[in-house]
Figure 1 (cartoon, rainbow, N blue to C red):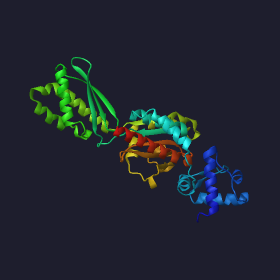
Figure 2: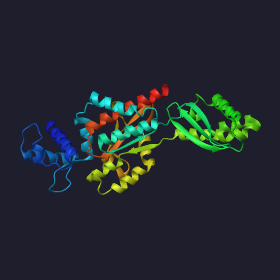
Figure 3: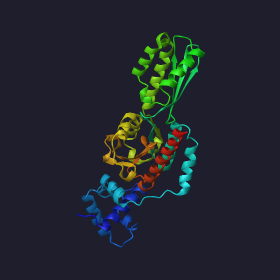
Figure 4: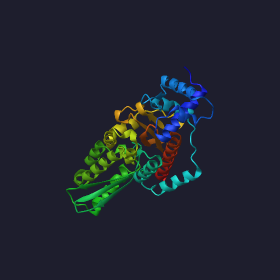
Length: 345
């Protein structure tokens, strides 16, 4: 059985109507949306063929039809007319993101909030993490005679801080020694080079001054490990409670989203992005049971040419693919450009 032009139009109309209403689509309702004249019986026959081909499902005997996972996939890849983002929308996105551009964490939170509002879904993102990030600046802020806060800024704009305690008193001389060691060994170098082995080697070279420096250098090593780990950010998850698709598994889904590890596994897996388009996992294509009545659309953003994080949404399978796919692609591109500009400043 082959997909004819008429079957394509009927499937497309069913998908788009179901996205809009969330109600199974019957043959009579469908006739009003088609741009060609056929009888209700002909439409029913074509719908039966589409069920047999795996593109439609019939929830109940007397109900209309709904798209299957395969039906949505066919629609997205072959039938969908992609929405063009207007210049006004682009300017609005840029304006709202620009207010948070100085801090990658805030920038991604703002992008997530925008996506959650735009899609009425949950927005998810990961902070930049790359072993090629370079140590841009280190500060030592004494908060007591034996306590100090170590601050590290990377080339990706990530700021991490850690408070540590030293056995010896923190003086101007010890602070200057710390800056000299950091400037010589770590500034301008990848964070991946701040290792325990490197700290141990430095400590051996410091002699009797090692006691004062080791706690500060260990804190710097811990900051580098923190910088290399991604943080998962979630915005708008309560939006999902508005969809009746989640009536039976809302608690299960919320608990799943609360755990960052499964989503990080999805984002770190190699997923196909055709022609630079976002990755799309529809319904049963999702590997985790909690997401098998959901769609994930996500795109990698790049900083200075390196894939550094992810931005996307999670929602029901009947989301507005035509509008959201280009919106997510555009927003991830803007986020990457803004973070790359931060790196150069």
